[in-house]
Image (cartoon, rainbow over all chains, first blue to last red; front, side, top):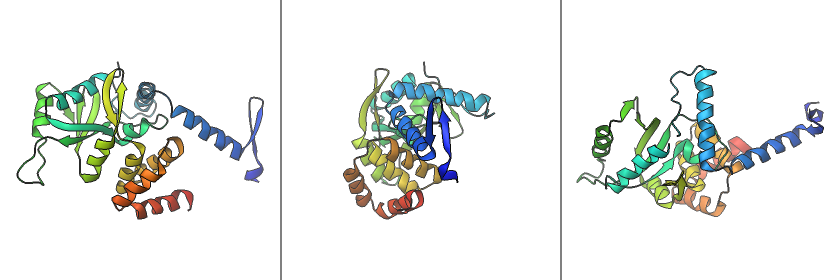
Length: 64
Length: 171
């Protein structure tokens, strides 16, 4: 049953397999981002962990 | 981060270390999509050699950083707002540093451990977080499979890698 489920995103209808494939493709694309951009995103993740995740011991990196 | 790398480069320029490279999660992040981590792992080849081979002197490095006003938080030294972990290299890590990719971060030269050695180091550690890192690298980065097999074989890590593959991919 689960294998037959489909996911609708905008005007696309995807199977679970297609959805995972698309996510993997997206991950591979993000892997090619410049190092600097990745570190900026890391700092954003650290900010999120600090505020939303309530991880008050997380040090948000100075990247400037 | 730029200033942090400049300070670490100073360690090399001042002759306190022979060489270094970024490893750990940030090393992996160079080759994968961004993911959360807390610290910057730096693998160093120490300059100081003592009569006793087992003794690695990190005091001059920490002394230099302390003199510059950097402080500790737990096992991290906070360099220009970034928590840094400094590890002296063993045999495998030394090869990883020597093989590391020269790159630039906002115009500052640095080196990052290449995927094949990051995988080998993570296989050796074999904690769950290391295995997840390997999975990400294998799926998202360009990995030279021949080189990986050579490194794994040379450091007797092939069996552990097979164990990882079975656990993650069932083969």
